[in-house]
Image (cartoon, rainbow, N blue to C red):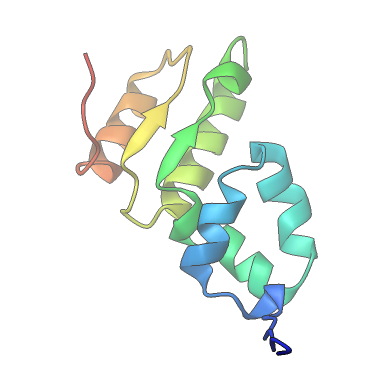
Length: 111
């Protein structure tokens, strides 16, 4: 008996599923490569699905405070309030802490 398989195109996956897949990629890949693959991937990469957990701890070490602030604002804004976890290093400005506190009221605090 021959089995019939139906294949679904990658660009037809729902944004939630794409977001889960994109979490396995590096930050650089999600920001620069994924959005260029096709419109649906670009939309998913810019949506909150990829930004529920943001880990820029290694990237943020020894970064210029201005660059770090811009990256945090970009990523936290993309999370659209769905951010649950943020890992970052070398925060030195009160404005950075204020921005995070104001935008991430639903994040779990870890001691």
